[in-house]
Image (cartoon, rainbow, N blue to C red; front, top):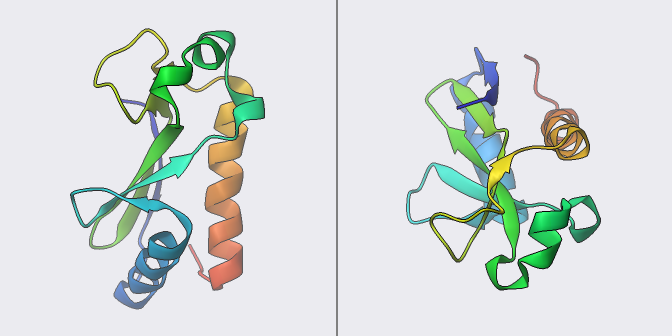
Length: 110
């Protein structure tokens, strides 16, 4: 799986990130995994056609001293679908910007 990894993060900063994600993402069944929506204007043509698969999102996973953002977009309602796939360039930029803005907003040093 392709992903964007931020590591060597202090426990205090991981707690800040966890709190931020609780407020700004959708919690999953697993406490350390969150779902972040991809804006509709960034969906590719297949994702736009698959209205029944919406919302589309990328996953964020927290570890003890790291955060991993998946560079894979999937729909929330189906496990396997043709609209799931690796990020387009614009979606990838959105994931990177989400990570950078979160770090900047929380004052985290990486």
